[in-house]
Length: 115
Length: 112
Image (cartoon, rainbow over all chains, first blue to last red):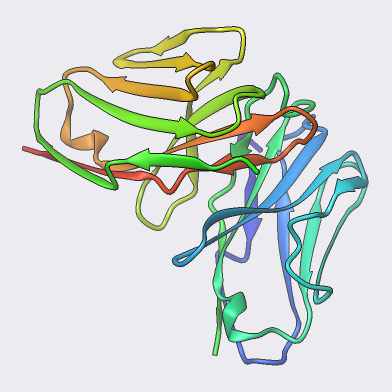
């Protein structure tokens, strides 16, 4: 596709349920990033993939959060036993190589609401 | 730890005026700085990326400058239009890691 796509665009879930968020990066982009945007915290980094490896998971807030990337393309962010504080917009970005010399391009985000 | 600040948090200007948005960062060991715009309920649109070795970048009515030693960047918007109304975010990429550290943004309103 022309840009980064994410699905679903909106997700409402009950506290304690698991959710999966999907990201399709721009074709050919080897680097993929997940960020979270919430009212109180602004935009925060979660995890970075280079190919299928995740050399930086430092932003994941707890062990309830995990992510994987397969085939060097699609990535899934999984949140187990969701809590109300997980409510936020989850943004995915991709870039051609590393962030050092390349722009990050963002998807439209998934708005997660935990009731 | 890198901290990025954007002042003011909100700005309203009449259509047609030129304006400047400010971004400051505490750690000058950066690879690059990127400016984005975000429309309500939407993702981020990349506007300009400035490498650490560069001093400015231009795209249409937008001009971004970078003074790495003082930890500052500005985004200049010429001849503002109502369609420029959005939140503008700056973000930096530091040596040694891949993530972007974002400022809190400036919400810009152009008054017709």
